[in-house]
Image 1 (cartoon, one colour):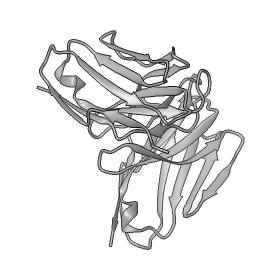
Image 2 (cartoon, rainbow over the protein chains, first blue to last red):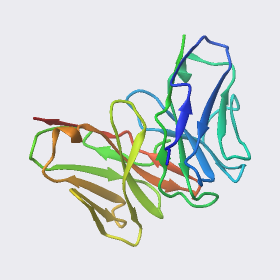
Image 3 (cartoon, chains in turn cyan, blue):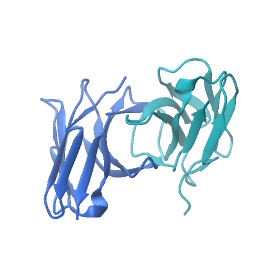
Image 4 (cartoon, rainbow over the protein chains, first blue to last red):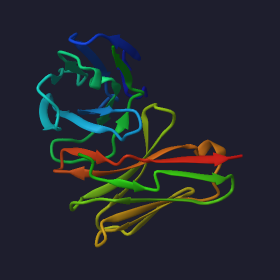
Length: 115
Length: 110
């Protein structure tokens, strides 16, 4: 089976622009989580979606939003980009969610650079 | 904010030696997980230990959990150059997300 896939692999944007990152979970997984990883640090939790509903939100501004589609794929949107948004954005899927933090299967990430 | 903190931040050993990494966390947990990350790529799950378990093994990996001290350790025995990576501990937080530490960067020299 295919693992978690993310697109695009790399992205360069300028301050103030908007970006959409995409994630396809492992087949059969209903939970998708998004993480931001700044260079030299561990991943920071942004959102979790389970069965198309937001089940968790980290400490990120409202410029960050996400959604999950009926096929369980997900999009992460970031508006009004700042230099500090430059990071590796990781998507992870899990069979479970909505009250259970279990093994996460990570995609390769999208490297976002904001100039 | 990050829940777990790994120690040491960086570790350099020779191939064949054992590597031990520690993780401390702040709040009560249901489970603790260890992940590996190679060169800024996606994370790979290594092992999950639940709060009612004290020790767990997987191949050359041994994880211990001490809930009274809010700490865990990851031991990699007979290390190989391919073990060079960053290692992160992650704890469940409010049951809906995981909190990662800043990681230990392990270098195994051939």
